[in-house]
Image 1 (cartoon, helix red, strand yellow):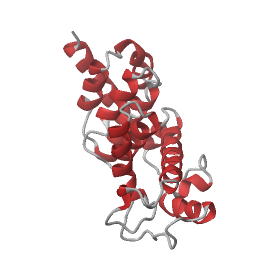
Image 2 (image 1 turned 120 degrees about the vertical axis):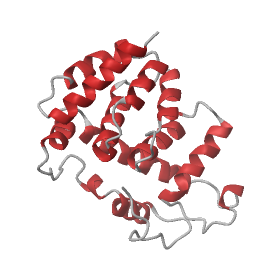
Image 3 (image 1 turned 90 degrees about the horizontal axis):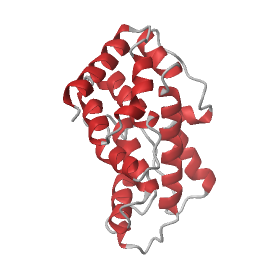
Image 4 (image 1 turned 135 degrees about the horizontal axis):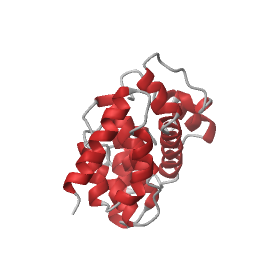
Length: 208
């Protein structure tokens, strides 16, 4: 998770690309070498990252955050969004910025991606399910992304499979999710296998 107590702030209201990128890498340091990860010893985390896409999900989060920071930096500093702020494009403003953009265009995929990624990466209790569903409804979302987000959420917080099962049912994405869930049910790590089987059982028990 990001820790605002130790992270630096931007010096300039309208930072250069170099300054903004340096700030971004302080918050998302893995994006300096996005696919070079230091694996911890727990087999479930290793397998989640290497076999089931959590590595790719973390890279995607970084890409989404970087794009959103650049979009925020382009927002004219006279815009009402900056009222009572330091007018710097920080990560902690991205949530409000994205919500503002959704108010203007409820189909803004960049805003939806930003909200979904931030909720998942920051450990929100529902890992951005509202925004994953909206992206799915736009027919522009690969089912692997919300499933990876759910697995990431499980690795961080261990809330079980109920939220992802409900999301898949609400999206009517049972068929799309079935292959990746079936593969996860054959995971080597017991924690992933148990979690995936829970989701499959919940989907079977609660689907219309």
